[in-house]
Image (cartoon, rainbow, N blue to C red; front, top):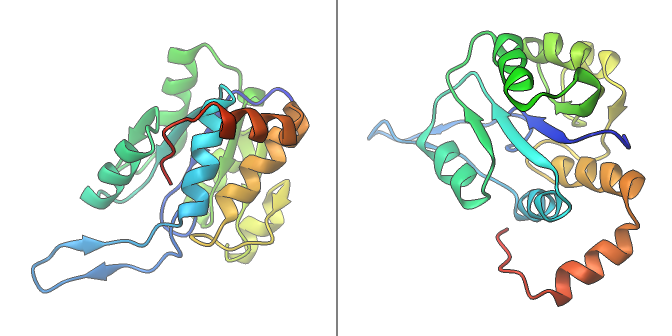
Length: 174
């Protein structure tokens, strides 16, 4: 985990609990976790880049990604591995420098390619069997935060990083 420079995330089942709420007005609603948001904010503070690659397209995801200043956002993607390969080329990164968290079978190609792979506790069995680490938390309930802290504890003195983050009086987005 010491070499990770880019965290790549799926959305449904990772940043959310996987539930879809579609109103009669055809607007899609998603529930995000503020602790995951803080984890992403701390990851950015530590110098890590972040990306979302998701199969669905949602205004809620675009809004949340903008709030959290996610560096790269790809929605409506059927071939996630192809998009990741293009992103790695653009950023001049190697596969071992990325971490990916996914929860379902469409995430398997990236999970098998990533330097470090994570799945939330609520991931399907085949995914949990294929990843390096399964978090104690489920998607939408702190799994991303748990992953970020695991990475940062390997890369830095985490307590010192948090202390610096707090007292730098950063504008915090959760």
